[in-house]
Image 1 (cartoon, rainbow, N blue to C red):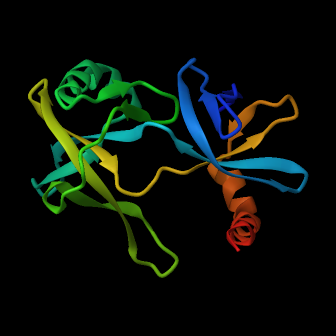
Image 2 (cartoon, rainbow, N blue to C red):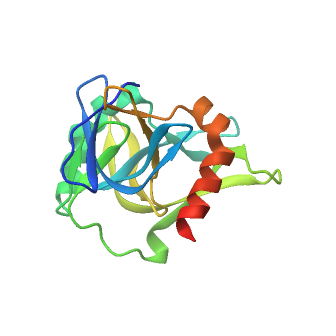
Image 3 (spheres, rainbow, N blue to C red):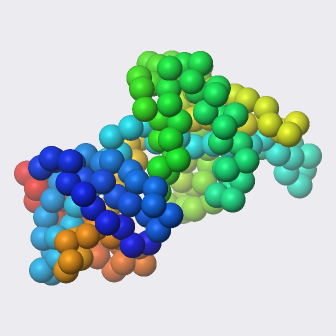
Length: 187
């Protein structure tokens, strides 16, 4: 995905995707690796995930990611439900976001999802979310959540000054060097 950048100030940039959607991000870290500038970015507004309840092969109800193509269908309903909490759902680049103050995290409104991936030790990777709301659309139940862990985005600056999000393949190639550089910055 080619991303353009427009500086907001020295510590923020705006990523733009191929569809013209933008994502304002805070620059958490900036460093050079192999003569290329890399940035570790954090979206300014809260990332939002939309899940749908569906039956699996064993007729059990499970939460599934809503496919990118289906987000447009549910978007206005989800936006109205979040507006009741004074949150403004936005169709931003990379992820949906919500502007406004997300309620305090309470243990009874959190859920843990097991991802299909395994960690280095062969254990399932899990991700925790705060449930913000549920809604119905076309007789299906949707859950609107925000991740409890920050959504960190790696990007690099191109020769023209634009930013491009680091692809998963590129990330795997430079992962060791990135981790080493980040640990050096933290010391």
